[in-house]
Image 1 (cartoon, rainbow, N blue to C red):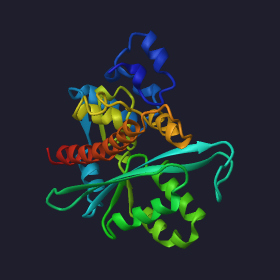
Image 2 (image 1 turned 135 degrees about the vertical axis):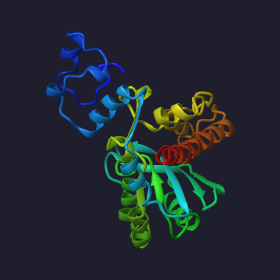
Image 3 (image 1 turned 120 degrees about the horizontal axis):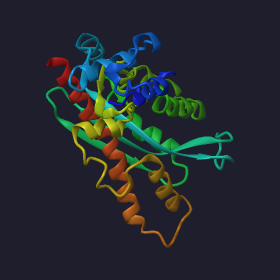
Length: 262
């Protein structure tokens, strides 16, 4: 609950030097007054957690069954190696898809490619993802929706179907960015891994790959045909990591639903 974690506060260091070292002691005249800051300060005043249940319940009400949880992994190339790509373009090489039906039944699909399998990935995604219901991703606006938009531009024959996915997309990061939920253990961060650590601390810790760039580094062994690499282990690790990302979203959504009810 250090005041140094107060998001976007230009005077946080000055206040800390003056002895206002924790969030609840922030000078209201010297903060920007954002929703995030309000949530952080109120969390410190309320035993470490703030929940705007009305706003959170309203946000949750837009979720429609079945709910699909989607995550991509991708590589970026300075010089485009494949047709349809631009300099510094992105090549998705894996997706994980968890699908939760009303009543709680959960299914999982994963797609992992080597080199350029973008069209096969599109076909698999459109085949596997339900035709109705919400699609949830974490930082969807800055990641999954961009990847889908890029694929729609590169493969126009699938454009309409792909853009329809984006119209059903819900960004799971929104409740945290909008100050609906804050826990002081977040310490000013709300990455998916940080949020998941509040719910189940060892979710990523015991995995060989536990962050996005680690997945990219391992995939490069496959893409470059590294004969010294343990291909089976890399494939298993990549699938386990990407699968954990979408399962983490399932856990976070369930947690938010429980917060809205209590």
